Image (cartoon, rainbow, N blue to C red; front, side, top):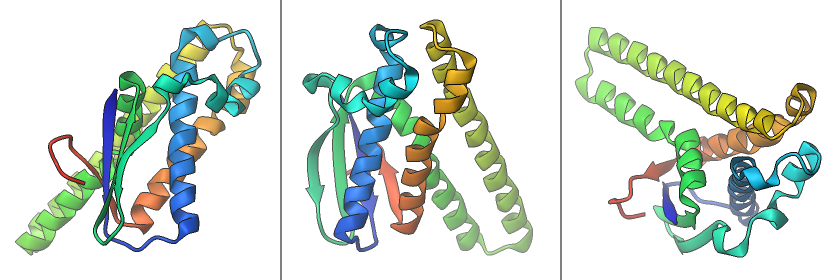
Length: 184
């Protein structure tokens, strides 16, 4: 089992917190069922993704290790290694962007600021390319177990949507994905 750690500097409503937990769980479960070849081809992709929670064995389900509720707060989750690596990859870029923007503010030099903006934009483009590669890998896994191109096209949004929702929550609640050696 691998862990995923977040810190947050903004206040949360119960509704926001529930939504974040739900989206993280949905993303994890859907990546899990796509990554596990035993699930492929036997049922429609739509049913596989919509019913992903019930297909993840209890021992591999995303679990909460701990939550600190104060500002700044923290959350730590555990899950199956290869799936957690994919989740971490999909949502890791914000911290890097924050570090680049903080460096730009400290330097305060117009030229350097413009160079940092270019570097930030390049990193965003690079992350988008990496996301596309990960999505391509997921599509290839789905094709490999017999799902048609049409079925994949009709259902890829079921993976992309929770990913986007998590990224929006990270922005609005000033969340950072922490490294394993950092405290949440």
